[in-house]
Length: 353
View 1 (cartoon, rainbow, N blue to C red):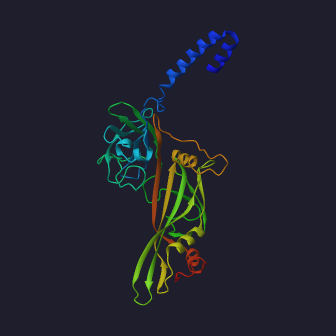
View 2 (cartoon, rainbow, N blue to C red):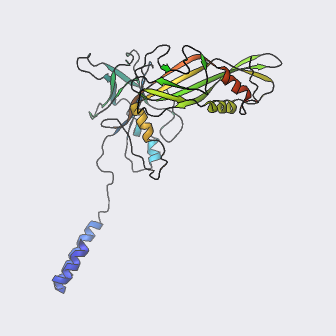
């Protein structure tokens, strides 16, 4: 704008006027050049970050709550100071049931701070981390309710909230409905090379199936028997349910053999037998599934991924999950044959009665 003004002055004004204009212009430029500090941070705004996965099968619920911060020093140094990221007791945290028309009145479950769970080494403040856990004696979560996380700053009054339903699965010996294939509750023999379908519980959109494989080692000379394991094997992981309410599984038997070969060393002095194992079924709610999908590494030419949050007046994720362990599961004959004869594991000395 100033250059354009000088150019027009040369066309319109006389040389004397042009000199006066130039002196005025230089004075203005000198005045602005003396004040060269620029505040790029802007006005400070409180931002709460919360992560939580509610599970009605757990007796204690945990929430991870941070505060975002601005700094003019190194971010890595600032993040190592716990006062920059933790609220401590300056916030009130509770869950409340979301009232439905004609339903019961809202119930609150209050949280206190805890540092009982250690934090792994890293950039952010350690060795302790401040978490928020439901108070002892508070009621357990009800699978049929919808819960709202409420975080309110005691000093500023700012309120951050997030709402989630729970996985609607009963707490009994067989909460999942298996459709054909391996019906674990009725036939305690499991084949990791099979396929089957399972009905999804309400509010579940993603599922993971894990085998906890255990085995026995018998010393050939002394006859001493030692129980070993578990070797944890991820057999199947489903994507979001899109068309129906059934999870379709094609189990990865090769993953099972590979995991066994990786975790058991060759020892000619022992004989090995398969032992009673466990199956763990884990399911995730819709918001957790969306969060995982958004944060999956991109394989396309566009590397920037959108951020995802379901927190109101803040950032983060609050969703639900559920897991159930089926104990005392045995491998079927085909699976045991594979342990003895497959290329991956035939050197490990598994014995078939």
